[in-house]
Amino acid sequence: MKTRSLLLTVLLCFVSTFHVISQSRTMESENLRILSWNIYMLPYLSWFNGNGHRAKIIGEQLVHSDYQIIVFQEAFSVKCRRILKKILQEQYPYQYGPSNDSSWSLRSNSGLWVLSKLPLNQLKCIKFKESSGYDMIAQKGAALFEGEFNGKRFQLMATHLQSSHSQDIREKQYQEISALLEEFRSVDVPQILCGDFNTEMSNKPRYETMLKTLNAENGTLSGNIQSTYDEINNTLAKQKDGKEEVIDYILARNTSRIASIQRQVLEFYHSEANFESHLSDHYALEATVRFAPSTTLVAGK
Image (cartoon, rainbow, N blue to C red; front, side):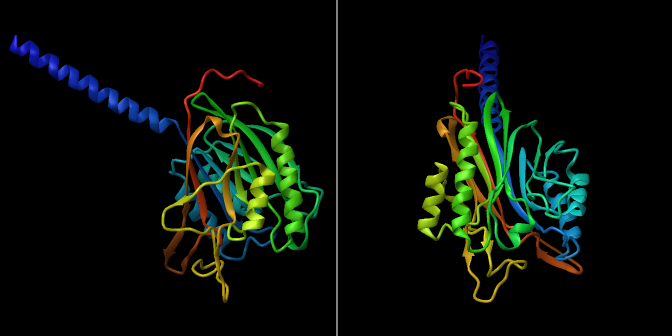
């Protein structure tokens, strides 16, 4: 009897432990991990700033990452994309973009390039109607995708807005993005917005205008780094009398099926003989999205 009781106790402990491990694995599997990063591979300038070498190092640092989706901005350079693709192709077989590419135009593409471990359905790409300054070289815009992660449908948008001080153009671009998102909005399908919005969080009127126009939500940044564009410490962005700003975001809309989003800024830096530098003038932004338990969704609703 004692032996049988002991065996029963051991069996119950094993079942309990297995249940805890299973729960932990299930919880992990419910987290969609996204990285959004402006990688500073400018059009027609792939030989500057060690771009080819930076692309190789970026690929090597990301190839074994646990992100399901990587959203690049400023992936203009064909040379650099080839380097990254060669390294990341096996782990990220689903690659989309760059959007707004044209072999018949002297203008570059949008620089938006999405790499994914999951198949995504590209819903639509738009090209912004207005631009100014250096941005006129690029065909900036937004690309919207839909995917499914562990039975949870979601939409993901990649974008890169007008740079410099052209806030009036950016506000028109907010409206264009909002129209795109509304066109494909579905009940119970979260929309996750990734990119370089070139809108300083410290400028409250502009920041609040962005969120209001997009009808989107942001959250706090965890970790020690509280800026995405750092003109003080970043080796590729340093400026005299520079400042630190948040201008890159992972926002969310239609969030009834999102339990939480944890956001964190990552500083990618590499040091070796003859090369010591940050890997972009922007820091990367990651999001860990935990979906809420859901009932069966009706497709198309």
